[in-house]
Image (cartoon, rainbow, N blue to C red; front, top):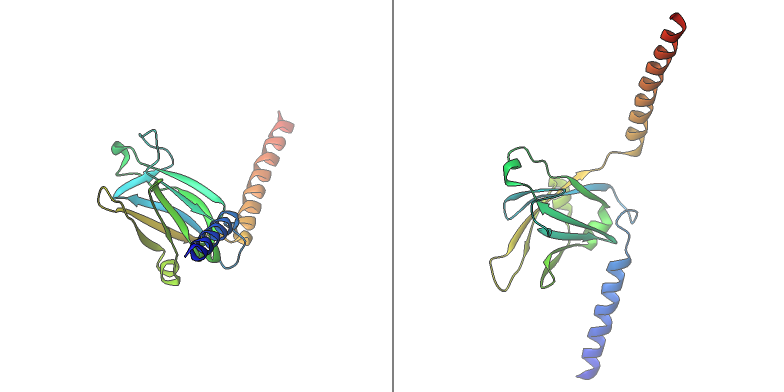
Length: 170
């Protein structure tokens, strides 16, 4: 009996260490922007009215805190992208934590990624489970971001050239 408990502890220690050291991006597959749309039906924000976050999530080595939005901003709040993770890191699991005693690892499926939404239930011994609505949007491809950046630079360059040209006429 003691040997099996020892094996279980070793297995848990190795599993926890592997999860904590896995990179959030770079393990394989397309990259997704991760946002938390709602916690128990309440919209989220980058910062909120409480001194403590509503939940904390971890993908690989990346950890982010999520606050509830100010009640006065519920109608115009857009949940921010809090991190990026590639498909393999998401399939390894997202740790969703409400408190030290209330947490779950949710393994994202292909269906979740294709629909862009997943509902995660964080169990609790004291109250109903916390319902967390995760959103996954494909991240912009670097080529698109580069071409947009080049377009912005060329617009800035033309404005600078116009400004320089106007100085010569004064």
